[in-house]
Image (cartoon, rainbow, N blue to C red; front, side, top):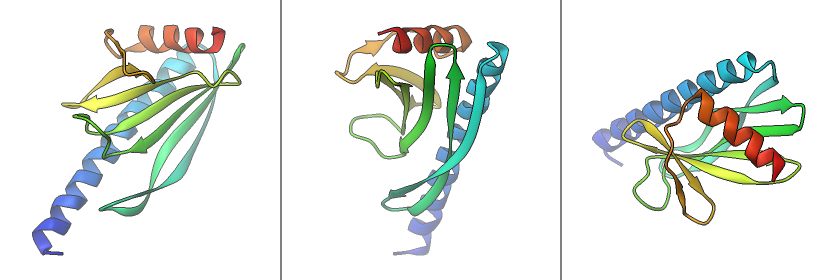
Length: 133
């Protein structure tokens, strides 16, 4: 592997982790504003060409259950530049947050886009909907 390829991969990973970090910080502040409990940790992800790396994830406790914000991969099928899952426990309902042009698009498991801006109101409503279903 050439030096330029290694440097490009390093930049891609750094950019991905920065984006996930900003997402996690946003969700933490939104959960705190709702007075929900927050547990933050890291998970190992194995992904070519990066090998193994660590990324932050969240477990958020609400009165109706838990929501997990869990990064999946920088490289995904389709045009997205990364995927983070928003999954409810115990219902196991999930939506995917797909990174595109440094913003987050919301997609159902069946590939139906949820055409709402990713913001606090959308996060709170999705959390309630995923836990209620």
